[in-house]
Image 1: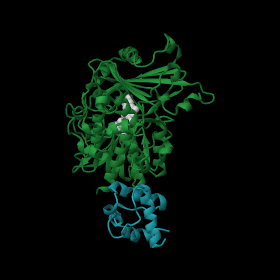
Image 2: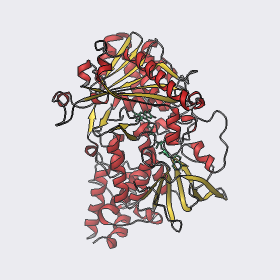
Image 3: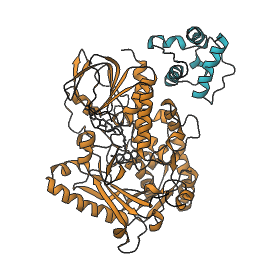
Image 4: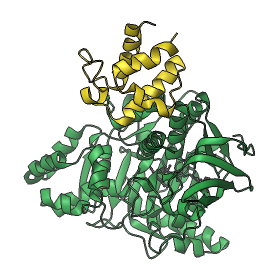
Length: 481
Length: 81
Ligand SMILES: Cc1cc2nc3c(=O)[nH]c(=O)nc-3n(C[C@H](O)[C@H](O)[C@H](O)COP(=O)(O)OP(=O)(O)OC[C@H]3O[C@@H](n4cnc5c(N)ncnc54)[C@H](O)[C@@H]3O)c2cc1C
C-alpha cells in the first residue's frame, strides 16, 4: 500500500471519499467511472474497514466476514449483480462459493436453510404445518428493496412477524439471522432493515468469495486504479473547515489541507459530524458491538461432523440481542465455519496440493464496549482468555461434539477480537458495528456538500455497504454543486 | 459513426443495463425514462459506459441532453469515431 503518499493540496477534487471500507471503496470507484476527479482517504494502512484482514503467525485472517448475502444473482436486476455491474465487475470475478446449509438453533428448536428459499419453506411446513400459509403471506408482504428504505421507521419487525405467524418460537427463529447480521437497535429491529436483510439472507442466500474478503477488496482497488481514482492510506481526516454551511476544506491528520467540491463520508454519521465540530447527542452512538473468537484446526470440518456454514444460536428459547452487562453475552451468537462454503464435491476432493487441510471456527457474540475499554492491558489479556473459553463452551453445544481432547489436540492457532479492536481499526464510536440506531436514510447532513454513506445511511453488511456507496455517489454526481 | 450507428451504440449500452426491456420500438423523441424502466442511476450507467467504451466524458451540465435518443444522437455523433 502506498502509505505516506499524500494527495495534492493544489488540486480541487470533484469528490473526496472518507474511509476505505466497502461503501467508501464502491463510491470512489463509481465517481471515478463517471469521470470525476476523486480522492479516497483512509486512516488505517489497509482497506476494508469493519471487514478487513490481517496476517498473524503466517496465516491470513478475515476480520468479520462470515458470509456475503444476496447470493442469487440470476435476475439481471438482482442487487448484487447490479451493484457489481455498476462497479465494472462481474459476479464471476468474485469466485463465490455458495453455502450448502446454515442452521438456526434456539434452545431445542431448529430450522435449516439453504440458498433455495423453497427448502426453508419445506422445513417450516414440516415443523410448523399450521404456519406455512402465514409464512408464505409474510414473504409476499415483504417490501422490495427499493421500498424498504421508505418503510424505515414504520414499526418493528416483531410486530410484522406477529401479524403473520402464531408461533413465537418460529418468529424468534426467523428474526435471529436478520437481527444478528445487521440490527443497530436492541431487542427489535426496524421493519425496513428487517425486510432488506430477510431477502438478502433467506431469499437470496449466503456465499463466500473463495479467496476471502481480500478478493473483493483487491477487485475494488484495481477498478479504482483503472478508472484513474486516487487513494491514500495512512491518511486520515482530522477535521473539516466549514463556511456558509458547506465543507470548504478538509484538514488531514498531518495538517495538509484539501479542497473538494463534494465530500462523501463512510466513517459513521456522528463520527463525520464530529469532524465539523458537532457534538454527538447522548444515546446517538450505536450500542451493538461484538467480540469474536477464531480457532484454526488441522483437518476438515467433516472430520468433526460440522456440516453447516453458519449457525445462529441461542441457549434459551428467546435469543438475546442487547448490550451485555458484563463483557460478552455468550448465550446467543453466531458460529461460522468458512470451509463449509463451496461445492461439497470440491471439499471431498481434499486439500489443495501441498496444503494440509484446515478447518476454522469463528464464534461471534455481543460485547460491551465500555467494559472492555475500562480494562488495564493485563486484565484485557486475561479477560480475553476467559471470554474466549466461555464463548466457545456455549457455542460448542450447538455443534457435533468430537471425542474428548480432539479439538484441543488439533488446534493450530487461536485469536480473538473485541470492541476495543473495532475502535482501534475503524474509529467507530463505542465500537459500534451496525452504527447509530437513528439512520440517515437519505444520507444528507446539515452541510450542503457533505453526505454520509455506508452503515449509517442504512447500508448494512458488506453488500449493503457497497450498494449504499454506489447510491450515494450517484446522488452526489447528479446533484448540483 | 452514422446517426443510426450512434443510436445503436446507445441501445447496446441500454441492453446491458436493462436486459429485461424491449427496446425494439423506442421512439427517438420521447424521453427514454418515459418509455422504459430506467432510474436516474441507470442513466448514470449510460454515462459510465460511454466513457468506458468510447472515452467520451459527459460533463454534468450536459446530462439533460441525453434524455432522448434523438438528443443522444445529436450530442454523441460528433464525439464518436
Ligand atoms: C465481527 C464482524 C462480523 C461481520 N460479519 C459480516 C458478514 O459476515 N457479512 C457481512 O455482509 N457483513 C459483516 N459485517 C459487517 C460489515 O463488515 C460492515 O457492515 C461493512 O463492512 C461496513 O462498511 P462501511 O463502509 O459502512 O464502514 P467501515 O467498514 O466502517 O469503513 C469506514 C472506514 O473509515 C475509516 N476511517 C474512520 N475514520 C476516518 C477518518 N477520520 N479519516 C479517514 N478514514 C477514516 C475506517 O478506518 C474504515 O476503514 C461484520 C462486521 C463485524 C465487525
